[in-house]
Structure formats: structure tokens, C-alpha cells
Length: 172
Image (cartoon, rainbow, N blue to C red; front, side, top):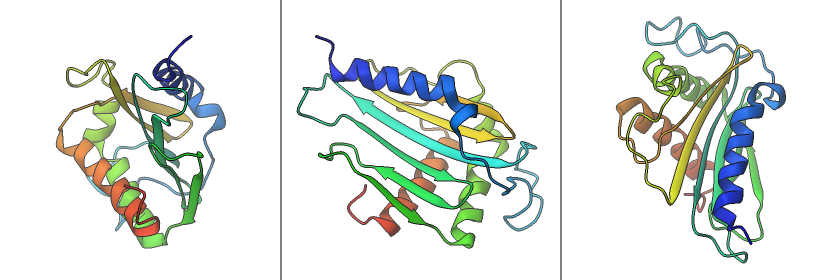
């Protein structure tokens, strides 16, 4: 019998492989809404969503070893808490100001470069995984970023964690 870690990693692979088709479409642009055109924003086209997924294992059948946080173009925050059973997807609509601030972080050119690197930016462990994926302009920018401490990755984690904590205080 396969462990749930294998299933969670397979789910992450499916998320990465299927990205552009199922990502929510929207009209928010990562180029200008957050205080004008930023020199740090990558020319990506319309922002669709940003997802951070985590999984760990080995994981027994009666455990939840997968979690994710997503901010969609229609300002919906979706949180699947790691370890929460039964699995519940918590939803909230963030303010336009919170959305603009988060999109500015998620479309930062240095973050996009790390997501497009083609290999993990640091040496990942074998028992946990953290994946970040930006969907913008019909394209997917994704990488495994487990244990990486690059400033753009830390900023993206903080932006999602701050939103999750604000709207779902026990969601961290």
C-alpha cells in the first residue's frame, strides 16, 4: 500500500502539470494595481492565482499530511490546513488593499525567477515538500522550495501566512 506522502506528492505533481487549465481567470494585473507599475514586478500578464502547497510523510491513512493556501484573482483566499481532519477548505474574500499587496509580492521578478529556475533553488529534504506556483498570463511558474530561505520565498510565505492568520486565526 502506498503511503499518503506519495499521494500528496502526486497531487503536487498534478497541480504543477495541470496549472493553467484549471487556474481561475481574473482581470487583476500583477503589473500595476499595487501602487502603480513597479520596477520589481515581472511583466506577467493577468494574475490568476498563487498557491503554496505542503506535504510531509510518511503519512498514515488516518492523518492529513497535505495543506495548501491559495489566493485567486477574484480575491478569494482558500486554506486547506495541514493536519486538519476532516479536510475542510476554508474560504474568505480579502480586501482589495490586501490583495494588491499580496499580488505585488507574488509577481516580484526575483520570486518568478526562482519559480522558473527549472530545479529547486536549494537542496530539498526527502520527507517533506513545499511547492509554490504562480499562475499569470495563462502561464505557470512553479518550483519546489522546501527549506529555501531566499528573501522572495520568505516574503511569499509571509504574505500568505499573514492572510491566513487574519482570516482563519487557527490556520497557521
